[in-house]
Image (tube, rainbow, N blue to C red; front, side, top):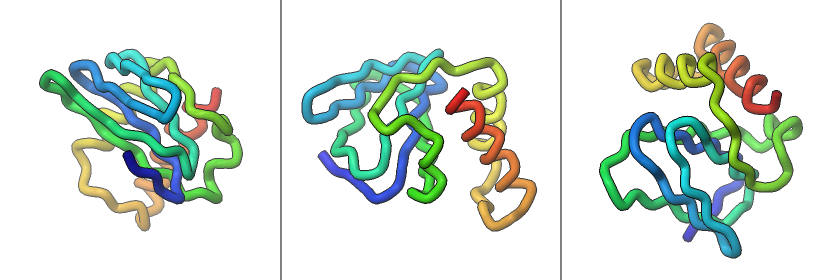
Length: 110
């Protein structure tokens, strides 16, 4: 179990992830993701083969996100953006990369 000062969005492209919180457990198939606000103690597990990613969100950008952990339905647009991002080297300092991340964050909240 661990926590961190940033938010985390966990998404499975293939397979089912298990996200364990102190008093909750989420099973995360590819059509869902899990939002974990900053400071939430959690553990991620996969009992079978998975392909997944975590998007870390700086605390100041988490204001519009849910204040509690939550399963979020993944739209086709969010799936496409996530799939595109995982094929790129991380470059958050580049404007183009930052704009793509902003669109993803906006769709996580809607």
